[in-house]
Length: 263
Image 1 (tube, helix red, strand yellow):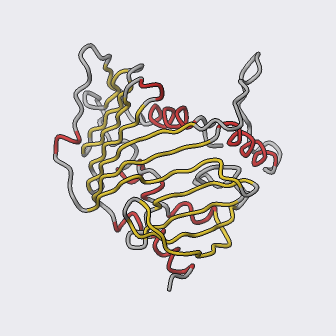
Image 2 (tube, helix red, strand yellow; image 1 turned 30 degrees about the vertical axis):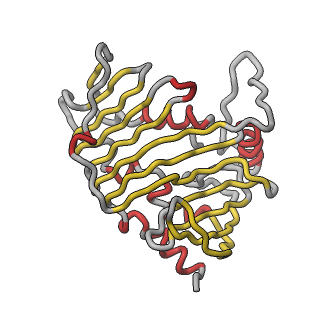
């Protein structure tokens, strides 16, 4: 029988159970309702602790209430030293790529070219290691403080994996690892063996407005070595930089998700 304690143990140890995997992920959200949820969340924070970004000198665009934006990405991970993360850009504008190969890292986007530490005088890893760059689905432990009142509902299947469906309330304080600020409730599908989050859905007033899901995943099958190299298109701009160079990647993720940077 599944229990809350069992689910918390699965979430806490998910990263250690899956050092090698390949996955396709999908993120979606309703921009209008996401902004509404974020505004409501910000209004509940202590005065001066949160500042919302706005468009300077003009009104923000009005987005249809039923519009859905989604992003598809692919991820390959091998131990704590190798990672490749690809993001399909909206409008068919290409693919952005991040690669970590031991001490070397590279970030590519069609508009900014390649940024890498390959020729840097102070080469270093992207942040500390692969763990720091994993999507939260594969390292959900930091989510635990942001949720409360867990309720185990049933077993189901997601991405061909047996999952435990869980309902949880969102804590309204400032938690940097909350998946979507402004939610008052989350529905989670926790892999019954590995503990990874196969799906997380954010709800406001009982209605889903955003979510992340693993579409497909394979564990324990190492990707070939050439997966963790990248050859940019001919003529691509290239520059080397000292750490931290990862900021570009997180700006890209927030831009594609249509969200403001985390407070």
